[in-house]
Image 1: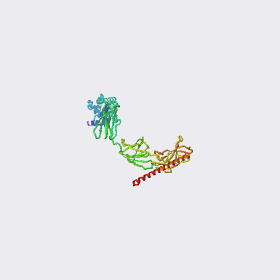
Image 2: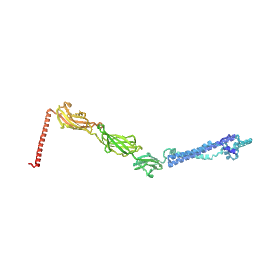
Image 3: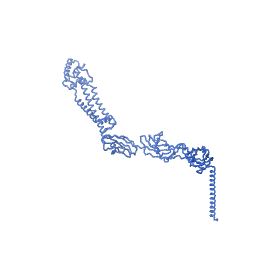
Image 4: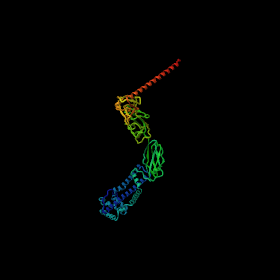
Length: 566
C-alpha cells in the first residue's frame, strides 16, 4: 500500500502498461486539463469583467482621482495575475500522472475496486515484488483492460463548474458588450480614465472650465467662469475653500445672452483658495486661485544727461521735479519689490515704450533710458511682470515737463530808426545784440527788395570772429552798392539779422530781429534828411536848455523861501 501511495504522489508520468488503459488515461488527462484551463479562463473573465465594471461604476459615481485609479488598476492586475497563475497556467504545467488519473477513475467508478491502480503499478517494469506470479499480474491487467474498454474515462471529469462559469462568462461578455454599445461615449471615456487618462467623468451636464488655474494680485477681484454642455441646468453653485476659512458656497450667475455660461465674481481676494463648480449632475475638478502681491516700485533714481551741445554735466533729478530739456536722456534705475522677468517704461503723450534692462547681480534692479522728445511727452509709468507672470497694476504716473531750447534773441541797436535813407554809394552801419541760453553758432543778415514784387529774401553770412558764446555784440558795415548794385532811386529794402544756436539735437533754433527798412535816395535828399535831423537835434537841445533854466529858477525860489530871503 505504501508503494501505491508513493507512486501516486510522484509527478513523473510513467510508461502506460497497455494500449487500452494507456489511451484511456491519455484521453482522461487531456479532458481533465482542458476542463481545468477553460474553467480558470471563465472565472478569470467573470471576475475581471466584474472588477472592471465595478471600477468604472465607482469612478462614474464619485470621480476617482488619478492616484486611486492607479491603485484600482494595480489591484485588478494583481487579481487577474493570481487567477491566471493558479487556475490556468498551473493545470497546464502540473498535469496529473497515471496513478493520479487511476485514483480519479476509481473514485468515480467503484466497480474497479482498486484493480485499475493495481494493474498500472504491477504492470510497470520493476514494480512487482519478488516471487510475484507473472501470470496473475497478466490476468489482472487483462481483466482491468476488458472492464475499462466498456467505459469512457472522459465522463469521470466533472463539467458542472465549466458549464456554470462558461455561461457566466458568456453572459457578462454579452452584457458588457451591450452596455458598451449603448453608452459608447460614456463608457469610452470611463475606459480611458481607467487607463489613467485625465479626461473628466462624462455627465448629462458636462462642465468645461476654460481657465481653471488663476494667478491674481492680493486685493483684486476674480471672475470664476464655466461653460456647460449637454443638459443646461437653471442654476448651479461654486464651492470655495480657503486655507484659513471654512468652505463657502456661492450661487452662480447665468449669462442671459449665452445661457450655457455661468460665473461668479469674488471681490477683494486676500489669500489662496480652491474652487469647484456643481451644475446639474456635473461636478468640475477642483482648481486653485493663487493670490500673490503685485510687483511695485520700491525706489527709483533718475539722472538727466543733457545734450552734448549744452556742455552741462549729468544731474540727478527728483521724481517731483522732472523738468527736462528737450533732447536730454533720462536714465532710470528702478528697484522692484519682487524678482522681475520683464519691465518697461510706458511713456504718456507719445506712442512708444522703453524696455528696461536687468542690472547684473539681481532680478529686482532694472535700468533704462528715455530720449526726451521736443514735444508730446507728459510723463511715464513703470510696468513690471514678476517671475510668476504677475503684472503690476495702477502704477504711479511720474510727470515730465519738457523744456524747449530757447531761440536766440536778436536786437538791432543801430540804426535806431525804422526807416533809414541812404544813397547808392552809402555804407550802412548795422549794430546788434544776440543772446542765447547756451551758444550762438551762426549770424546772417537777411534782406529783400520790397519795391520789386516777388523778390525772395537773400542772406549774407556774418563773421563770428571765432566767438562762440551765449551773448555777443557786433557791428557790421553793409556796403549796399556791392551787395545790391544798380538799385534805382526810390527802391526800398527790408533787412533784419538772424542768429542760429548750436542745438544739433532738436534744433537748430533760429531767432531774428525786428525788420527795418532802408530807402535809396539821391544825394540832395540825403543832405536834406541830414539837415532835418540836425534841426531836430538842435531843437531838442534848445528845449533842454529852456527846461534847465526853468528848473534853476524854481530851485532858487525854493531856497530863498526856506532861508527867509526875499
